[in-house]
Length: 300
Length: 242
Image (cartoon, each protein chain N blue to C red):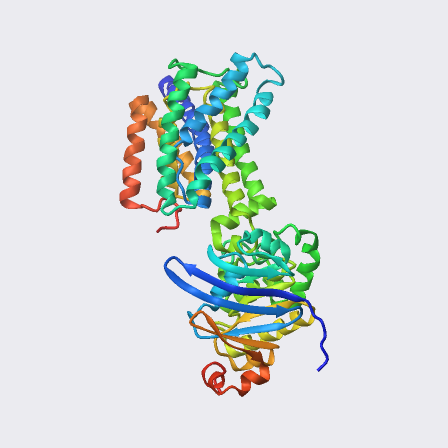
């Protein structure tokens, strides 16, 4: 029927697709968090990638630093996620909210978060050293269907990322605070008129995005490594996904994340892993030249 | 005439408002009693909307005194003002375009004090605006101008407010819809709400108004009841279009 070579090729392609899907799902998680903040506050957070590291490092401290074992990863998530929310909320209230009263605050927020990113990178270097860190897999072992081998880890990453996005989507559409977040994104003046406390919504949105990217950090640190600098790469990826999907469009971000995840896996397979980032930039440039509003952006 | 004591719902004294360099309101004084419909007339761009926005905490730079139910509310955050029972209904509607009619209405009841009344108020506004019932699943952005205006008023009512600041509800509407919206405002007033309404120059406004103010160049240039307004040559010509 098929030659052995063809079958081997098929396995390799399956591996690439799985890698693409699991990467894509984490990118989706991060892009949705980023686009949410942009859609609501119209400000750009350059420290986003460093919150990815923060999630990974918090989990690392718990597991290796404190020897935390209660309920496995579920216990880690139960502790780290509220912590990420608190960090995000406090940072927004203490650092970004005071800027918002000034003129041209969007640019000032960019500068501030850029500074924050540098600060966090240095902080991580001092505290954790430059050596790479990795987290144990959330679920060890493999699932074998005939000759196909799936790592449970990949499946868990995929399921948990999509679960996180689903939960966010449910919250946005079914809770009072979620509707308020959408209201502020759609019409800030209207939101103010009906008595939605904009400041609190801004801070909550920022905190939610911190949780999402921190969650992404925990998921991906099991497969890849984190070091103090990896926030920069993550930031670039999240940014390209967001720009390609269309700033402020959650649905666009989702499509873009999977397209880019697949593209990376495919380029890595054909040309080698280091070409992934080159492909990313080519895609970014192409997007900015041919469709600056992104896949599903509203233009402007 | 017998003097009947009626609570002053809103009293504005020495109100000055600024947008950056421009001085929009100059020493404005307005008072509205419980249950009244007070109409603020005046040409476009002379500060009528700014007055309503100042009252509802939507203008940053204001000085003076605004009392609501005898409590000072000057400089208070809008969400707290809404919670006290004062709501601004915008002339350009300010709806949430990608949400349905029902979602818009529910967000109208976002204030803490409005939440327990959400269900009752929803039934009430659907009674007042039967048209919205059949459109409740429709996106706000796909509604016609008249329907969007009704939705804006209905969303304001969802806040359970006692005091409505309605900004040019008839702007851009055809006469039949204009008539409809005025009769609904009349109905709302009959049900005990107090209304401060801004209009440009509509003749039928006089049948709605208990009292009339006129604002020109950021100052109150006339204050009086309906008959006085109708008897005033200058007003009749300029604002009432007669």
